[in-house]
Length: 300
Image (tube, rainbow, N blue to C red; front, side, top):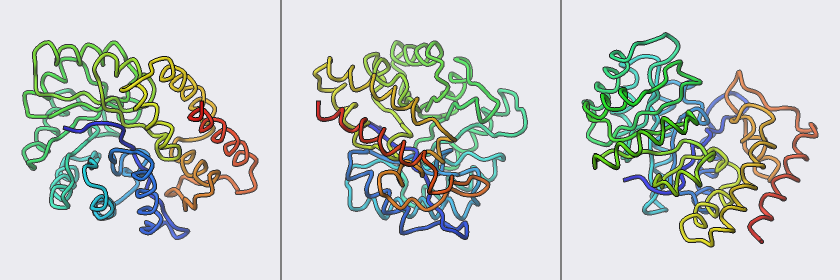
């Protein structure tokens, strides 16, 4: 089972728009060295919807190569696409690459009914032997899971749910249903927001985007939540949530690249049409100062 703090890691591109393998792997290694327990590959942060199937498979292989030096780390390949056939193909290739689990948003762009969405996941599940996690992200897919949807996904063999909806009522109901019925189904929170109260409830795995640029902060917060003291865990969590708001100056993927530059890390470029502000933009210095303040929290 997947455990701990994972990152929906960015994919780094060069000036020509090609995957920068060296910088992407350097970033992966740096995050592992700073406490991250695994990767959620080619998701929203990782520019999956902007990449070809071949490029996404390349990222899966890059991650597997890095993970060889870090035993025990988890790799989830996000295979969500606009069509079923491509998602199935990506899932098969991820399994061939030695990835531990599959994650997928529902098919997007068009509006689908529940039966069509469940059928999409059923085909992915049937195509591989590794666990498949459904990814509830209604902001980007136009489809919001319900408790009934989750029950139907469980029946077709989906192993768990990654949820980024921030709908605490829905998430808690799903979790307690799983707990009370003793179903073999894992619930993962797909954001840092709410991770402390969710952990206290029993959800012990998070996939947090801030790990792209402050992995040590998120990892330490998680450790404090697990081991205490509780008072310090609460203070670090509150400060982390304030920091998250401050850093929301652009799309989260762009922010990750900018924040890494602010830390002195050559983060290449996001995939176009996303672009970075000019490096003379004062936002970089602003980020540098705010990151330093956030990391000072760990010295409390």
